[in-house]
Image: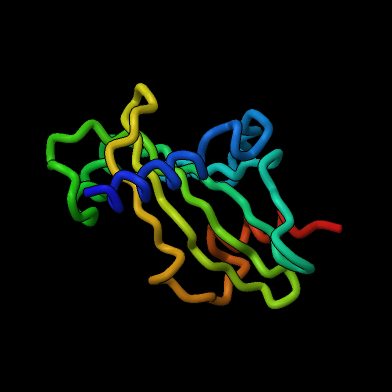
Length: 142
């Protein structure tokens, strides 16, 4: 139980404004009938040479919420899922991304579920025609 509490606390800190030292500057990159996809232009953080950490946000429509709830494990079907915040590392030169964490929130900003995914996800190529490819194009500008 203590490990779960600490993991939740760390993941919550990952998405807090204090942890990133600035209020989010959400920039709309993509929108479809299921969701709107944003990139935090002010939240980039250099991890090491050529690698940055970024935040993204998905705000769900009614249709997208139903699909997301169907795919998510551990959230009740009646949960009032509103959005998901993601934390990624991006290697600009290699055009690769690594998902670090995801937090699912209700419309009040309360966390419904947080997952630390750094240990279970791999670096993956980010094709230019994907949402994360759009983030790479924005975040890795000289």
